[in-house]
Length: 299
Length: 287
Image (cartoon, rainbow over all chains, first blue to last red; front, side):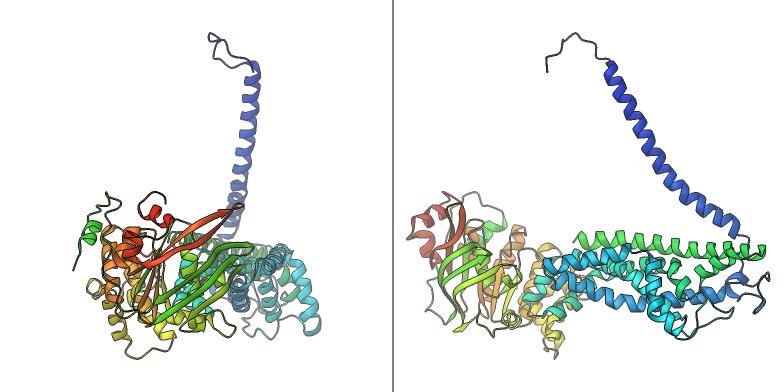
């Protein structure tokens, strides 16, 4: 590198101008990509709202599908599917939550780095597993022998959300300061009592947030339900150990496959209900999570 | 009664590094031995953190451990209630006896050890519970459920915090000031009536006024408890402790190992130290 002439003009050289051009192009490309991501979400929600809004009415939310066993009848609602989805997701959460919290406790409080790593890896792989694979697994395990049922669907959904609940819980447990564990141990309190009395309460908000996220995820899962819980009646079904239970994702799927325009409209309506539930759940959870991180971390 | 050094601390007058007026109180007749350490080595993995510590800690006496950072004083004090057990690679050799029982013997349960040997940490670490529950939580779990209200009041009085918090026992402990939180931690530790209180730099995160309060408090607590205090503040050791142990670092072949240089009555250690390294440290020549 030579020295510069003091009198040399400070304008850009051709080479610098070329670099600036590249810079502008790259920046424009990246910006466009970012805008596109937002646009995709916007257009999707927008079209669901446009198509589905006309369906929305009190009757759509509180009535069962009209026409009894007949298909293609206009009117009626998806109350059975809303209740069914809530039931399936509720049972799935009841199965996955205790398990997930226990795994997270094991990982943060008891496991050595050598045992924790493969378990975390397994959970991450499970999280990335295509849910249709989970569905076919549960199909082989429960449905092939006992037929479709709510419990088979809930079990499949539990498998899907288990890694989600575990990882969020684990992250929150790690945020509980070591100081507090030390304080408890120094009082002659055993490890389990410390976890129950100090660690879990400290992480409670975060764990609940993880549950909300998991519920939102489970509510929208369709692939496992196609295989475990897709042939159902128009009535409200509450027995999870009995036949398949009506649910929103399968309603959307089957109504949209239907030859009747009235049912296409119902599919849009159901999609709107589902998307609103999930968006609200997700946004609440995110807000809760941010607050929780600040609260625990800021200690 | 606030003696002069305390006043000095309160006003922040630390200008003269060496105006140490050791608590001349001639050590009373030696009391019962609580801890007996003989040739204790502490290892973290392959590294020897502390080597060859032998000392006796007496009942109802305040024993201070001073020395530069990394000299192993905290390590030793945490060895006394097995708080180091959770650190991977921690190992101790030599004898650490508590009333004649080996603390690191096979059948000894660390939970039971800590039940009797309480600890207060450098940073105040109250639980995210109410003031009342911070103190009542452990006694309840340990089966000391009777007269829990009185127990809480007694602990808070013992930690000189009762008058400041008696009207808001149900409010969160996290709303207290740092000094109040630390006294709450002391109250929490004495609520389960341990025999020993280990204080690991209890005032290092506090302002001089709060520090003075804690130091005054220690003089009261000494009547009931055996106290071991780790401090990086020599003046503090001189003000509160009857016995002082000076730890230092020995560097050989790149390894830094903590050693106990000298252990004596505080007055002797500060005015007529036997070891040159002690004299250099207490006169401020290094450290």
